[in-house]
Amino acid sequence: MYEPILISITGMDRPGITASITQVLAGFDVHVLDIGQSVIHDALSLGMLVQIPVEIPDEQIVLDAIQKKIDELNLSVRFVRISHESYEHWVGQQGKARHIVTLLARRITAHHISRLARIVADKGLNIDKITRLSGRVSLEAINNGGQACVEFSLRGHVPDLITLRREFMQLADEIDDVDIAYQENNVYRRNRRLVAFDMDSTLIQAEVIDELAKRAGVGKQVTAITESAMRGEINFKESLLQRVQLLKGLPDSALAEVAATLKLTEGTERLMTTLKKLGYKTAILSGGFTYFGRVLQRRLGFDYVFANDLEIENGLITGRLASEIVDGEKKASLLANIALHEGFSLEQTIAVGDGANDLPMLSIAGLGIAFRAKPIVKESAKQSLNTLGLDGILYFMGFSERETK
Image (cartoon, rainbow, N blue to C red):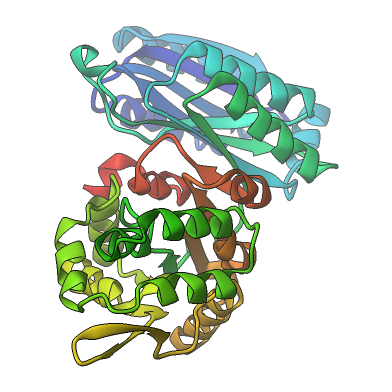
C-alpha cells in the first residue's frame, strides 16, 4: 500500500483550477482523504491529502501527471509523503475538543494576533483555521472607525478553562480597543434561536429613568441611585422603588418627550434587521419601563417585551409601580420561560446586558454577553463586547459580514 501524499498547490487563483487538478486525479481513481482551500487577495493555497490505489504500478506516474497539469496552469506544487504511522496519529486526533476564539477591534494589527497566538501556543492548542469575518476595507478607510473581526478555530485539550478566559481578558485590557471572546465550538454555536436584550444602556444610549428624573427635577438623586445599583452596590428592587418614588407628580406626557429623544446604540438596527431576516426570536427583558420597550418593539420588531409598568393616575406618575418588578432573577426566569414556550433549549439562547441585574440571565444563557458593561459585570460574564457596536454580536455567532448583508 502506498503512503498517503500531501499535495500543496499555490499560485494565483482563477476559475477551474480545482476542477482541472481533480480531473487528473480522477483518471487514476485516487482517494481524497482530506482537502482544504483558501484564497487571500487572489493568492490560492490548495491542499489535498490523497492515496494512490495499489492498482497503479508506479505512483510516480500520477505525480508526473499532476506536475504536468500544474505547469500548464502556471502554479507551484509540493509533494510530501506521509508515513502510515503519522496518518493514523492524525486520524486519532478526531474527537478532540474544538474551540473558537474571536478577535474584534476597529482595526486589527499584527501585534494583536501575535499576542493572542502566543497564548494559544503556550496552552498547547493548535490553530486549525483562521477566518476573516468582517468585510474588506479600503486603505483610505482603514483608520476611520470601521469593524474588524478574525475568528480562530482551535483544537486541543484545555485543562483550565477559567485561566484561559482570564488570560484572554487580561490581554484585551492590556492592548486596548480589542475584544477577545472564547467559545466551545459545539453544535449550539450557530444554532442559537432566541436573543434577549436589556434595554437601557444596551439597546439605547441612556438610562430612561435618569431622563425622566431630569424632567422631574430630581436628576442627581436618581442618577446616584442608578449608578450604585448598576455597580451591584445596592439591591435592584429597592433602588428601583426609591427612584420611582422620586418621580411622583411627573406628568405622563414626559414619557413621550423622553422617547422622542432616545438614541439607539450603534449597530442596533443592523443587528435586529439581520436577526429578523434569519428567523431569530428576540426579546427585551428590562428593569426599565414597558412604555419605552413598546416604542422599541414597534420600531424594531421585537417579539417579546417584559419590563416595569409605571402607575399613572389622572395623567400623573404616582411614584409607584403597577406590575411585578423585573429584576435580575425575573429576567433569568423570563428568558427560561420564553425559551420553553418557543421550544428552544437554554443553550440556544443569547442574553445581552450591561448591569449587575443582567448577570442572572447572562449566566444561564447559552451565550451571555456583557455589552459595554460595568466592571463587575464584565468580570463575571463569560463574554464581553466593548469595542464595536451591538452588531458585533453577529461575529460572536459566527456570521461573516457577507452573510448578514
